[in-house]
Image (tube, rainbow, N blue to C red; front, side):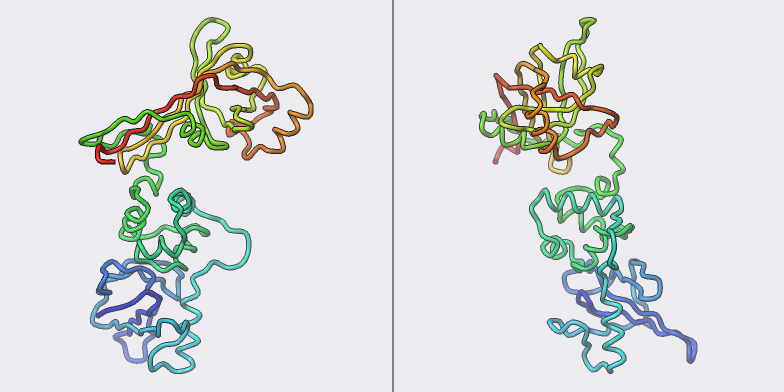
Length: 307
Protein backbone atom coordinates (compact mmCIF):
# COMPACT_ATOMS: atom_id res chain seq x y z
CA UNK A 1 0.00 0.00 0.00
CA UNK A 2 1.32 3.42 -1.00
CA UNK A 3 -0.23 6.86 -0.65
CA UNK A 4 0.44 10.52 -1.41
CA UNK A 5 -0.58 13.55 0.60
CA UNK A 6 -4.23 14.28 -0.15
CA UNK A 7 -5.14 10.69 -0.99
CA UNK A 8 -8.03 9.13 0.90
CA UNK A 9 -7.87 6.13 3.17
CA UNK A 10 -11.11 4.14 3.01
CA UNK A 11 -11.93 1.53 5.64
CA UNK A 12 -14.67 -0.90 4.65
CA UNK A 13 -16.97 -2.25 7.34
CA UNK A 14 -16.67 -6.06 7.77
CA UNK A 15 -20.46 -6.21 8.24
CA UNK A 16 -22.57 -6.51 5.12
CA UNK A 17 -24.16 -3.21 4.33
CA UNK A 18 -22.25 -1.59 7.15
CA UNK A 19 -20.97 1.94 6.99
CA UNK A 20 -17.39 2.66 6.01
CA UNK A 21 -14.99 5.24 7.39
CA UNK A 22 -12.79 7.45 5.29
CA UNK A 23 -10.40 10.33 5.70
CA UNK A 24 -7.63 12.30 4.05
CA UNK A 25 -3.98 11.33 4.30
CA UNK A 26 -2.43 14.50 5.75
CA UNK A 27 0.91 13.11 6.93
CA UNK A 28 3.43 10.58 5.63
CA UNK A 29 6.06 8.87 7.74
CA UNK A 30 8.00 7.21 4.92
CA UNK A 31 9.19 8.89 1.73
CA UNK A 32 8.00 5.94 -0.37
CA UNK A 33 4.40 6.48 0.81
CA UNK A 34 4.10 3.24 2.78
CA UNK A 35 2.18 3.11 6.09
CA UNK A 36 1.63 4.38 8.70
CA UNK A 37 -0.23 7.58 7.83
CA UNK A 38 -1.66 10.57 9.65
CA UNK A 39 -5.33 10.53 8.63
CA UNK A 40 -7.90 13.27 9.11
CA UNK A 41 -11.22 11.42 9.47
CA UNK A 42 -14.26 12.90 7.73
CA UNK A 43 -16.68 11.88 10.50
CA UNK A 44 -14.82 13.35 13.50
CA UNK A 45 -12.43 15.89 11.91
CA UNK A 46 -9.69 14.40 14.12
CA UNK A 47 -6.22 13.35 12.98
CA UNK A 48 -4.86 9.99 14.13
CA UNK A 49 -1.90 7.77 13.31
CA UNK A 50 -3.18 4.81 11.28
CA UNK A 51 -1.64 1.44 10.44
CA UNK A 52 -4.10 0.25 7.75
CA UNK A 53 -5.44 -3.27 8.06
CA UNK A 54 -6.71 -5.66 5.37
CA UNK A 55 -10.09 -3.88 5.29
CA UNK A 56 -8.52 -0.59 4.21
CA UNK A 57 -7.48 0.72 0.81
CA UNK A 58 -6.18 3.95 -0.69
CA UNK A 59 -8.25 6.01 -3.09
CA UNK A 60 -5.62 8.01 -4.92
CA UNK A 61 -6.26 11.62 -5.87
CA UNK A 62 -4.95 12.78 -9.23
CA UNK A 63 -2.29 15.20 -8.07
CA UNK A 64 -2.43 18.48 -9.89
CA UNK A 65 -6.23 18.16 -10.24
CA UNK A 66 -7.57 18.86 -6.74
CA UNK A 67 -10.76 17.11 -5.78
CA UNK A 68 -10.66 14.36 -8.45
CA UNK A 69 -9.84 10.71 -8.04
CA UNK A 70 -8.75 8.06 -10.47
CA UNK A 71 -11.83 6.16 -11.69
CA UNK A 72 -14.11 7.84 -9.17
CA UNK A 73 -17.73 8.75 -9.67
CA UNK A 74 -19.16 12.27 -9.47
CA UNK A 75 -20.34 11.50 -5.95
CA UNK A 76 -16.86 10.33 -4.93
CA UNK A 77 -15.28 13.43 -6.45
CA UNK A 78 -17.50 15.76 -4.45
CA UNK A 79 -16.84 13.70 -1.35
CA UNK A 80 -13.08 13.99 -1.87
CA UNK A 81 -13.36 17.76 -2.16
CA UNK A 82 -15.27 17.96 1.11
CA UNK A 83 -12.81 15.75 3.00
CA UNK A 84 -9.66 17.39 1.62
CA UNK A 85 -10.74 20.88 2.70
CA UNK A 86 -8.57 20.99 5.80
CA UNK A 87 -8.39 24.77 6.01
CA UNK A 88 -10.16 26.12 9.10
CA UNK A 89 -13.58 27.71 8.71
CA UNK A 90 -13.91 31.44 8.29
CA UNK A 91 -13.76 33.50 11.43
CA UNK A 92 -11.27 34.63 14.01
CA UNK A 93 -8.37 32.15 14.31
CA UNK A 94 -8.04 30.44 17.67
CA UNK A 95 -4.52 29.02 17.51
CA UNK A 96 -3.56 26.42 20.09
CA UNK A 97 -0.33 26.44 22.04
CA UNK A 98 1.37 23.93 19.73
CA UNK A 99 0.23 25.84 16.67
CA UNK A 100 1.58 29.12 18.01
CA UNK A 101 4.97 27.54 18.71
CA UNK A 102 5.08 25.90 15.29
CA UNK A 103 4.20 29.18 13.54
CA UNK A 104 6.75 31.12 15.60
CA UNK A 105 9.56 28.63 14.86
CA UNK A 106 8.65 28.61 11.17
CA UNK A 107 8.78 32.41 10.92
CA UNK A 108 12.08 32.59 12.81
CA UNK A 109 13.59 30.25 10.23
CA UNK A 110 12.06 32.22 7.36
CA UNK A 111 10.10 29.20 6.10
CA UNK A 112 6.81 29.24 4.24
CA UNK A 113 4.02 26.88 5.21
CA UNK A 114 4.55 24.99 1.97
CA UNK A 115 8.26 24.42 2.60
CA UNK A 116 7.69 23.48 6.24
CA UNK A 117 4.97 21.02 5.24
CA UNK A 118 7.24 19.49 2.61
CA UNK A 119 10.05 19.01 5.11
CA UNK A 120 7.69 17.52 7.70
CA UNK A 121 5.92 15.35 5.09
CA UNK A 122 2.47 16.71 5.92
CA UNK A 123 -0.01 18.61 3.78
CA UNK A 124 0.14 22.44 3.77
CA UNK A 125 -3.57 22.49 4.58
CA UNK A 126 -3.06 20.41 7.69
CA UNK A 127 -0.17 22.67 8.78
CA UNK A 128 -2.49 25.68 8.36
CA UNK A 129 -5.06 23.90 10.52
CA UNK A 130 -2.45 23.20 13.22
CA UNK A 131 -1.33 26.82 13.28
CA UNK A 132 -4.79 28.37 13.29
CA UNK A 133 -6.95 26.01 15.33
CA UNK A 134 -6.61 24.21 18.67
CA UNK A 135 -5.06 20.87 17.72
CA UNK A 136 -3.04 18.03 19.20
CA UNK A 137 -1.03 16.33 16.44
CA UNK A 138 0.23 12.78 16.82
CA UNK A 139 3.69 12.00 18.14
CA UNK A 140 5.09 11.15 14.70
CA UNK A 141 3.79 14.39 13.16
CA UNK A 142 5.18 16.39 16.06
CA UNK A 143 8.60 14.74 15.68
CA UNK A 144 8.59 15.46 11.94
CA UNK A 145 7.69 19.10 12.56
CA UNK A 146 10.40 19.43 15.20
CA UNK A 147 13.01 18.03 12.80
CA UNK A 148 11.82 20.35 10.02
CA UNK A 149 12.06 23.39 12.31
CA UNK A 150 15.34 22.52 14.04
CA UNK A 151 13.77 22.15 17.48
CA UNK A 152 12.35 19.41 19.69
CA UNK A 153 8.90 17.94 20.22
CA UNK A 154 9.26 18.88 23.89
CA UNK A 155 9.77 22.53 22.94
CA UNK A 156 6.78 22.53 20.55
CA UNK A 157 4.57 21.09 23.29
CA UNK A 158 5.88 23.71 25.73
CA UNK A 159 6.90 21.09 28.29
CA UNK A 160 10.13 23.00 28.87
CA UNK A 161 8.42 26.40 29.27
CA UNK A 162 8.95 26.42 33.04
CA UNK A 163 12.63 25.52 32.80
CA UNK A 164 15.60 27.86 32.29
CA UNK A 165 17.20 27.61 28.82
CA UNK A 166 20.53 25.91 28.30
CA UNK A 167 19.79 22.46 29.72
CA UNK A 168 20.80 20.77 26.47
CA UNK A 169 24.21 19.19 25.96
CA UNK A 170 27.12 21.51 25.21
CA UNK A 171 28.72 21.27 21.78
CA UNK A 172 31.61 18.83 21.47
CA UNK A 173 33.86 21.46 19.91
CA UNK A 174 32.34 24.90 20.62
CA UNK A 175 33.74 28.16 19.32
CA UNK A 176 33.20 31.53 21.00
CA UNK A 177 33.04 34.52 18.63
CA UNK A 178 33.29 38.16 19.66
CA UNK A 179 30.61 40.25 17.94
CA UNK A 180 31.22 43.67 16.46
CA UNK A 181 29.06 46.72 17.25
CA UNK A 182 27.03 46.45 14.03
CA UNK A 183 26.20 42.79 14.64
CA UNK A 184 25.26 43.64 18.22
CA UNK A 185 22.89 46.36 17.01
CA UNK A 186 21.31 43.94 14.53
CA UNK A 187 20.74 41.32 17.22
CA UNK A 188 19.19 43.85 19.55
CA UNK A 189 16.65 44.25 16.74
CA UNK A 190 13.67 46.53 17.30
CA UNK A 191 11.88 44.96 20.24
CA UNK A 192 11.85 41.93 22.52
CA UNK A 193 12.62 40.93 26.10
CA UNK A 194 15.93 41.77 27.78
CA UNK A 195 17.37 42.14 31.28
CA UNK A 196 18.36 45.36 32.99
CA UNK A 197 20.86 45.37 35.86
CA UNK A 198 20.54 48.26 38.34
CA UNK A 199 21.57 49.18 41.85
CA UNK A 200 18.57 49.87 44.06
CA UNK A 201 18.52 52.78 46.58
CA UNK A 202 19.53 50.36 49.35
CA UNK A 203 22.68 49.49 47.43
CA UNK A 204 21.75 45.97 46.33
CA UNK A 205 22.22 44.92 42.69
CA UNK A 206 19.05 43.69 40.95
CA UNK A 207 18.47 42.17 37.51
CA UNK A 208 14.92 42.17 36.09
CA UNK A 209 13.46 41.19 32.68
CA UNK A 210 11.72 43.94 30.71
CA UNK A 211 10.06 44.43 27.33
CA UNK A 212 12.08 46.85 25.25
CA UNK A 213 12.20 48.70 21.95
CA UNK A 214 15.13 50.10 19.96
CA UNK A 215 14.36 53.61 18.72
CA UNK A 216 17.03 55.80 17.10
CA UNK A 217 19.76 53.52 18.53
CA UNK A 218 18.44 53.98 22.08
CA UNK A 219 17.05 51.11 24.13
CA UNK A 220 13.69 52.24 25.51
CA UNK A 221 11.30 50.56 27.93
CA UNK A 222 8.06 51.35 29.71
CA UNK A 223 7.85 51.00 33.46
CA UNK A 224 6.18 52.42 36.59
CA UNK A 225 7.74 55.20 38.70
CA UNK A 226 8.03 52.94 41.76
CA UNK A 227 9.50 49.95 39.87
CA UNK A 228 13.03 48.51 39.93
CA UNK A 229 13.82 49.72 36.36
CA UNK A 230 12.82 53.25 37.42
CA UNK A 231 15.69 53.15 39.92
CA UNK A 232 18.03 53.09 36.91
CA UNK A 233 17.23 56.69 35.99
CA UNK A 234 20.26 58.95 36.39
CA UNK A 235 22.73 56.05 36.67
CA UNK A 236 24.83 53.90 34.37
CA UNK A 237 23.22 50.53 33.82
CA UNK A 238 23.86 47.26 32.02
CA UNK A 239 21.26 45.84 29.63
CA UNK A 240 21.55 42.29 28.27
CA UNK A 241 19.72 40.40 25.52
CA UNK A 242 20.38 36.81 24.52
CA UNK A 243 19.05 33.88 22.52
CA UNK A 244 19.58 30.16 23.10
CA UNK A 245 18.94 27.54 20.43
CA UNK A 246 18.34 24.56 22.70
CA UNK A 247 18.17 22.02 19.88
CA UNK A 248 21.48 23.10 18.32
CA UNK A 249 23.30 24.01 21.58
CA UNK A 250 24.13 27.42 20.13
CA UNK A 251 23.37 30.96 21.16
CA UNK A 252 24.43 34.56 21.47
CA UNK A 253 24.33 37.40 23.98
CA UNK A 254 24.67 41.17 23.66
CA UNK A 255 25.56 43.52 26.52
CA UNK A 256 24.86 47.26 26.35
CA UNK A 257 26.21 49.67 28.98
CA UNK A 258 25.22 53.31 29.23
CA UNK A 259 23.32 56.00 31.15
CA UNK A 260 19.58 55.65 31.74
CA UNK A 261 17.31 58.68 31.59
CA UNK A 262 13.57 59.26 31.77
CA UNK A 263 11.87 60.60 28.63
CA UNK A 264 9.70 63.61 29.52
CA UNK A 265 9.39 65.69 26.32
CA UNK A 266 5.69 65.28 25.26
CA UNK A 267 6.34 64.80 21.53
CA UNK A 268 9.03 62.20 22.27
CA UNK A 269 6.70 60.32 24.64
CA UNK A 270 3.89 60.33 22.04
CA UNK A 271 6.33 59.10 19.40
CA UNK A 272 7.50 56.23 21.59
CA UNK A 273 3.94 55.22 22.46
CA UNK A 274 3.03 55.25 18.76
CA UNK A 275 6.02 53.08 17.79
CA UNK A 276 5.64 50.55 20.60
CA UNK A 277 5.25 47.02 19.25
CA UNK A 278 4.00 45.30 22.40
CA UNK A 279 2.45 46.06 25.74
CA UNK A 280 4.64 45.30 28.80
CA UNK A 281 4.04 41.66 29.71
CA UNK A 282 3.88 42.57 33.40
CA UNK A 283 0.69 44.57 32.79
CA UNK A 284 -0.57 47.41 34.92
CA UNK A 285 -0.08 51.15 34.45
CA UNK A 286 3.41 51.58 33.00
CA UNK A 287 3.58 54.96 31.31
CA UNK A 288 7.09 56.02 32.35
CA UNK A 289 9.52 55.75 29.43
CA UNK A 290 13.19 55.11 30.25
CA UNK A 291 15.89 55.22 27.57
CA UNK A 292 19.39 53.78 27.66
CA UNK A 293 21.91 55.18 25.19
CA UNK A 294 24.73 52.63 24.97
CA UNK A 295 28.28 53.90 25.33
CA UNK A 296 29.63 50.36 25.13
CA UNK A 297 28.18 47.49 23.09
CA UNK A 298 29.70 44.01 23.15
CA UNK A 299 28.52 40.52 22.35
CA UNK A 300 29.48 36.89 21.89
CA UNK A 301 28.17 33.93 19.91
CA UNK A 302 28.68 30.20 20.49
CA UNK A 303 28.82 28.01 17.36
CA UNK A 304 30.41 24.70 16.34
CA UNK A 305 34.14 25.04 15.69
CA UNK A 306 33.69 24.44 11.94
CA UNK A 307 31.32 27.38 11.46
